[in-house]
Amino acid sequence: MNFDYDLIVIGAGSGGVRAARMAATYGAKVAIVEEFRVGGTCVIRGCVPKKLYVYASRFKDQFDIAESFGWHVDASFDWPTLVAAKEKEITRLEHAYASNLEKPGVEIIRDRAVVTGPNGIRLVRDGRELSAKYLLVATGAHPFVPDIPGAELGITSNEAFDLPALPHSILIEGGGYIAVEFATIFAGLGVNTTLIYRGDCILRSFDDDMRRGLEAGLIDRGIRIIYQTTIKSLAQTGADVTATFSDGVSAPYGAVMFATGRRPNITGLGLETAGVALTDGGSVAVDEYSQTSVPSIYAVGDVTGRAQLTPVAIREGWYFAETVFNNNPLKVDHSVIPTAVFAEPEIGTVGLTEVEAATHGDIDVYVSRFRPMQNTLSNRTERMILKLITDKDEGKVLGVHILGPGAAEMIQLVGIAVAMGATKADFDRTIALHPSAAEELVTFKAPTYVYREGKRV
Image (cartoon, rainbow, N blue to C red; front, side, top):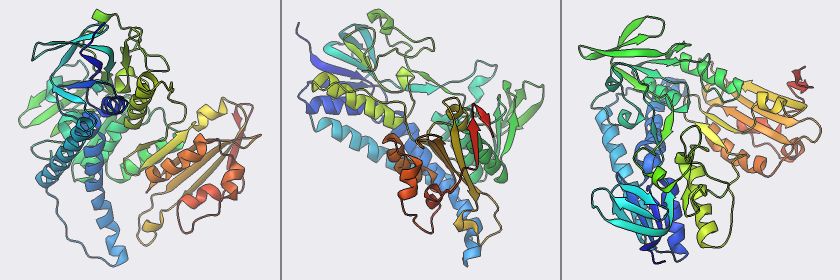
């Protein structure tokens, strides 16, 4: 059967772009369809602008400790300047992504695609029907907004980057990494910030020491945290938005932001026409090679609901191209994924949490808490936390968790060792780099505490 293309990719985010580029490099005729901007969530309205805004928010902390190092700072902040600089950078990156696609011959189609069958799509605006030997769904995910009265008065991470002005106050609903990162951003830029979460502590799936450590850090920065409560409705009150909570209390805010999770972009995609199966959570169901229930259709990235992280989507896209177009079947290992939370303080983590590791057998836990060196000349009392979790018998490192300055950079390098199966003895053989926070990971002498037969001793 003759097809228009060897591969049509739906969605030009990180995973789709990598898959399209690699497939074209291997000689495939490839088209990629994108209805918004090339680069996807990460580049346009996710990781990249978020990290830039986190940098902006951290200057206040630096100014606060500057006097202890002899500096005298008189600074002011201008929101429009930051927004314009962000837009300039993501536009540059968008052009770079498009150029990287065009170099190996990928055709970029600026339209919305709807799947019409195992090998076909229809372009919504153009109206054309196109076919390919393979289809790759890489449409990502979108912020979830609760179905409550007045929900349209709230914003999500999509809109937060381009507000016409900073609100005088903001209420952020959610307890995940997006919620705490935006709480850090707004508070650091001088906005009176409140975080509301239905659970009893932020970052539900993270190690407890990281959760409590970040909680303390956010509170130290003036962020109010309300637990075991949700927003039941929103209403306009003059220039403010009044939130009514599940406990009956109401309060006005300059803005309300929902950071209540993300859902896969499958609505109106036509997957049911081709018979593509979904998971119970509404994600595209795939096997270990990213193949769906329809042999000619694959899916990568957030739309699959596996690990909603940009580097994971990139790896899945790469391995898809290797498997299908380079006769080199590769499976992505999702078991060891270093990740970071760019809040303040920052978190970097890889491997099992303490609770998870304790279910696997006897473990040793090493914990170090200390003031970051940059704060020792000031009166700031926040603590860094470095935590190492190892198997008792063989000493294999099961998890590493870091809270404090540079945590993300440290965990990327530590992740290499953990992925290689490093042991406590391997860490011990490594000479410490002094003075550094990371040296604590290779200088632990004895466990802080242990777990034996599932119980902390």
